[in-house]
Length: 76
Image 1 (cartoon, one colour):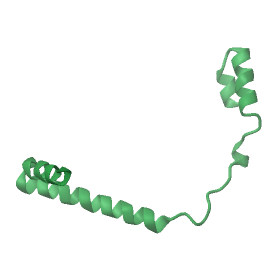
Image 2 (image 1 turned 180 degrees about the vertical axis):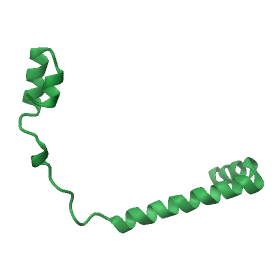
Image 3 (image 1 turned 30 degrees about the vertical axis):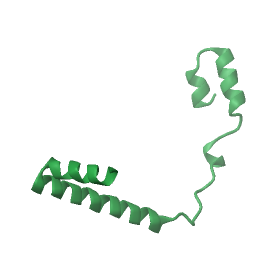
């Protein structure tokens, strides 16, 4: 029995679980492609990190009012 159907005590539900995913296993999984956009992911992560550091610096120096004023200015 697979791990999913071993946890299901109802025979009818276990049969449904077996028929819904009949032959899936770890060997059937496809590897991720080699052309993943790692440079784009890293650049987005770095930009988010820098923006968070800048936000905490503004919060520490001028208080929360500055950030709320900036958000209100951008929204209007």
